[in-house]
Image (cartoon, rainbow, N blue to C red):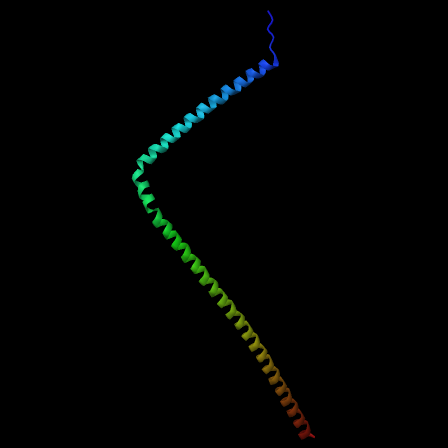
Length: 131
């Protein structure tokens, strides 16, 4: 007795096997999901009062977070203004120090010239009195 199997029948058989495997996997996944939901329900029931309290406090928490963010924004604005003032003052101080250094340099040049003139005058005076 000979049995002939066509490619169509083999493909249908393989498709049936794949469908059975996918169905088994789906059943296992749904069972695990159902178990997970049951555990979450137990946890939610055990903490029902705390969840209700937390939900009641949510508007207050949101308001506090909003106030904190406004305060932080205002602090950043003040810090930015302070940094601008400090930068401007440092620039003015640097200019003032530079000007003072220039003035000291000019005064030292004048003192050096006066000292040279005095040395030259005394050396000429000694030469003329020695002759």
